[in-house]
Image 1: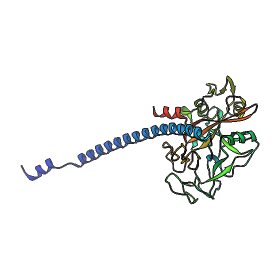
Image 2: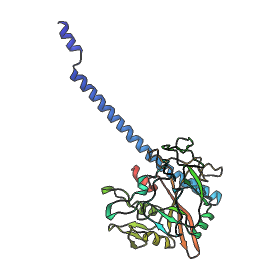
Image 3: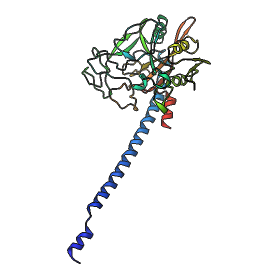
Image 4: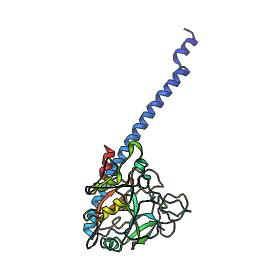
Length: 326
C-alpha cells in the first residue's frame, strides 16, 4: 500500500470537516437554547416568589407598625402638576420618571403605559388620579405622607447595581428620588380597570385582572365592555373609573413602587432587607421594582385606604405571574 492511499484513509476531507463543524454548532445552539429556557423559567419562578415574599413582608410590617407605608415610589414625573382633586386622567401616561428632559431617566415598561389598538383603542394599565383632602387624610392615617418622585438633581437612590447615580445622561441608575409630600390635587398612579395590553391574539384585559386579583368584581366582557358590579361601562372613558370609585365597598387601586427608600425596606421592625428587582424585566433603563396596590374607597364619612395587593413591574398580579410559569 503506498503512502498516498494511507493519507487518504487517515485524514478528513473538507466536506467531512464542514459536516462535523455543523453538527457541533447545532449541538451548541440546542444547548444554549435549553439553558436560556431554563434561565427564563427560573426568572419567572423567582418573580412569583418575590411577589409572595413582598406580600408577606407588607402584612407583617403593617401589623407591627400600624401601617406606616411611607416613602413608596411615585410612578409619575417629579414635575407632574397638580389638578382638580377627585378627577381622573386616562390619557397618555408619562413613561419617563425623570423630570428633566436633558437626563435619560428610568422609564416604565410599555405594558404599564401603552394601550391596545383593538376594539377602537383602549388606554393603558396606568392612569392618573388626583387626590382629594379626604384621600390625603386617609393616606396619612395609613402612614403615607411622602412619595419618592424621579428627578435629576437633589438626592439619588442606588441603582440595580448598587452604585449611586450621578444624574448623568444615559446612566440607568438615574431613578433619582426626591420626597414629595402628597397634597390636595396631587397626582398618583391608579390602575385603570379598562386597561388592555397586547396586540392581536395577545390582547389581555390586564386592568380588570388586577382588580379581580384584589378580590373585586371587575370583569372584561366579550363585547369589549367593563362589567363592574353587574353594570357595563365603556372602558375607553374614565366613567368606569369614577363609577368604581363611587361604589362603596369596591374602590380604585392606587399604585406605588417598592423602592430602596420605602419605609418597610431596611427597617429593623419587620419588612424587607432590600427592595427586590423584578427578574422578568431585563432592560436596565426600565423601572424594575415591584408595585404595591392600595385600595382607596369613598364612603359617606370620607375616604378609606387599605392594602390590596402587589404586582410586578410588568403589571402582573401574582395569579398572572403564576400562569406565566405554567
